[in-house]
View 1 (cartoon, rainbow, N blue to C red):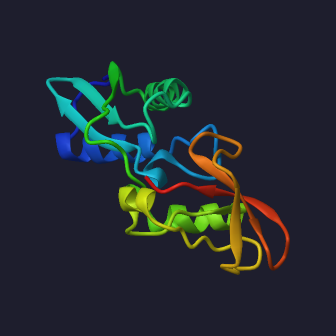
View 2 (view 1 turned 135 degrees about the vertical axis):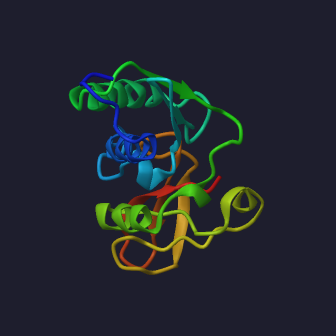
Length: 168
């Protein structure tokens, strides 16, 4: 970290969390990594900053870009050096997504995952609300939508196709 005196560690940790958490997901630019629950931890110890992120699924191509954007945001604020670690365990779940993030998805035209369903949704029928009209008379068209973490659905009421952020 640059500067004459080091600030209070907890205050610095909170500021780093705020700055890193504001980084947007490159695949869904209306969501920050804090909204998604991808930002898992921030540690400050002996002048070293470590940030932990968890991908929405292993192999997510956005993780390298997210790590770079975190480093750039912190560097711009004069916080360096920074190590960004990708942590795979515990595996990310849609339960980690914030309510604000779910609302942002809906407003952007993507049906958010059902809250509290998480990995359990993999084993049951999904009731997906159309982000356009709110109808639950919807059907899955394809298991994958514009990205691997979304499925393509269609509303039978308004006939509009839409992405659904899959529960997992």
